Length: 80
Image (cartoon, rainbow, N blue to C red; front, side, top):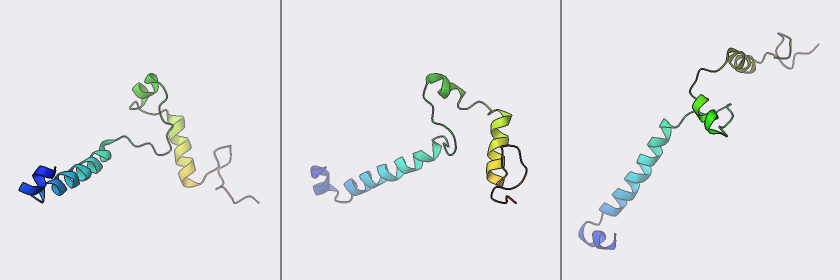
């Protein structure tokens, strides 16, 4: 890089900056892990992209809507 700086002074900065921006953009292709357990085994990784069970989807929807999943349909925090 020192030799390149003497020949083309802007090339090292462009190279390192471009690699940093490119690496940051590549992270958008990583799988989403929000509210999902991280895989611990190879089998977990193989099952990662399979369609989740219906029970898991219902649990996530109730958590988003604020519904108590223990058995009530009342929003959490509205106990009388």
